Image (cartoon, rainbow, N blue to C red; front, side, top):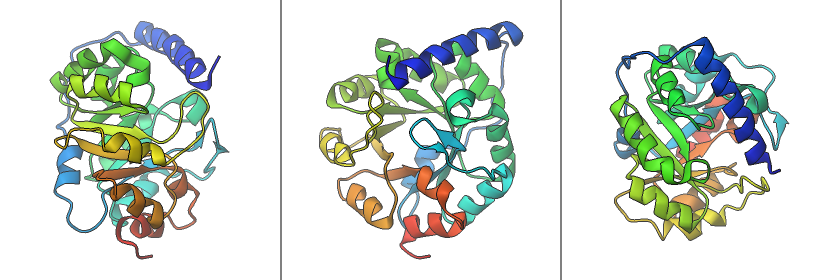
Length: 256
């Protein structure tokens, strides 16, 4: 069993419990902030989506000190165009409450980063205030267009994540708001930034694209932006930094 399949299996079990404990009801989104527009309107440097996460399957514990509100303020001051919040509890030590706290603290659009396998999680995402949700093409397959449409109906944008050209085909057909290229192989957990270079040239120009995983320095940012992607999503490098604000500023503008 791969790490991805194990995570997905655990998520399915968790969602079934949550559905019984909190049945789906009508939800009203608090008012979406567009991550897509935040990227497109940014003119002050590289568009960086900073990710708040405590841990990951590949790195283990990344940041033990995790004052969510303070971290959100720091990345906002550093020039991030959006914030990604890990809400998966078993492997990433995330909590749904983190996202709500971030959204209340800053005015940036907030992305829910989790392994969404059930439509119930879309309603849940709207309820906690997510402006956008991560949808993984490798996980959802043929269900992807339905999930993109459902998220849009609930007032949220979709960042559809792909890691090869076949998945990119599926993603483009679903017409997402944002298209993410994951430099990490979710089966082996190995990172290769050249994945962005290979897939970006294959994507239609009208898609707003984001390079994800393995980006640690301004040099890495420049490399992937050189392929034509519109933004980068950076988690581990930001969370490992002693000065989070300065790290985001370095990635976004090249300065510290």
